[in-house]
Each structure stands twice: as structure tokens, then as C-alpha cells.
Length: 142
Image 1 (cartoon, one colour):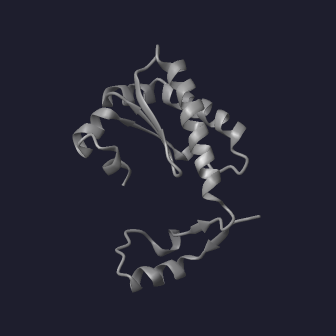
Image 2: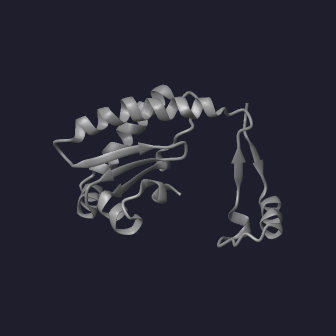
């Protein structure tokens, strides 16, 4: 089964009706939804990713870089380094790219519907979380 795409005019109409403030071009808006996609599948994925893949990845990279935490949600995977310097350094030296590739290949082994894509894996720092979000993950993900 394929998902459906709501064309941007419908979204624009709803945004005007409910007074949403859009900061993008109308032509660039696409909304995809999968009416068959069950929350159970997303929960299954998040559980497998957090309990298995994230733990393996942290263990694998603990001697190379200092990962504070990895959090998987139904929408993204965020790898938290401890500091902004580590985040930038690991981006420059290719470690972050390696993490994305390894993470993604392990996810593909369990993700039968290709829910997660490489562009849903992000890097952040605990330092930024503490500084700009008062160390609160709830505020960060909101």
C-alpha cells in the first residue's frame, strides 16, 4: 500500500482557516501520510532501535568519541555528543557520517517499511541542550 499526498493548496487553506503562520513557499509544501501505518510498528521500531542498535553503537564508538546519549523517537534519531566541539570535530573527521551509515544499515535490517531514512538521523550536543533547553529533553523535542 502506498501513502497519499495532500497537495499544498489544501494545507494552505487549512492554515489560513486556523491562522497558522507559514514561513515557506506554498509550492514547497507536501504532506504525506500513511493511513495504514500503525503506531504499534513505530513503537516496535523505536524499541528495537533504542534497546539494541543505539546501545551497540554507543559501545562501538565509546573509545573514539564521547556519545552522551542516543534518543530515537517516531520521527528522528538524535545522537548527543557531550560538547559542541565534539559534535563539530566528529562531523569534520567523518565519524558522524560513519555513525549515520552504520546506524542506517542496522535499522534497515528491522525496518520493513523504510520508515527511517538517513536524513532523520541528527547530531546534537548535551552542551547545547543544557544551554538552550535548560537540559530538558521534553523541551528540546517539543
